[in-house]
Length: 125
Image (tube, rainbow, N blue to C red; front, side, top):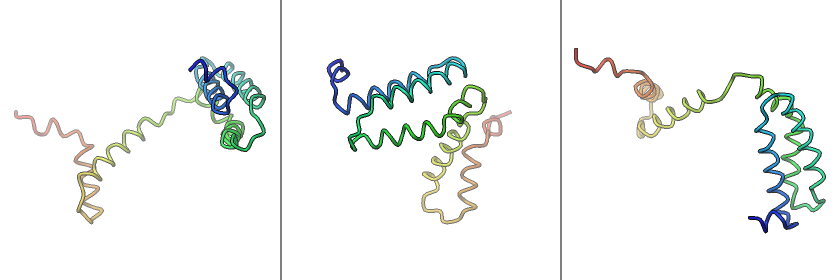
């Protein structure tokens, strides 16, 4: 790893840029994140070689630059996609269990059966 990091290969350049982006995500405040994104974009553009093999990295940097205000919202917003990811997991489980069913209503019923907290219903009184 140290040899790769020390080399001037395009793989090493892309890896350094990726690690610098990880450094941006570790910022503790929005001011630190804003400074880190600015520093990251400047440093990454200095590292890039004009070779076309690094075009995907250039596109990723352009995306970071255009979406930087949305990226910075991570530090001020309390929203996350955890609930959506959880729902997606339920939908995938329902899809796996509902194989062979062609009716949308049956699929929705399977989702409700998987997602609903029915544990108390089946406990004996």
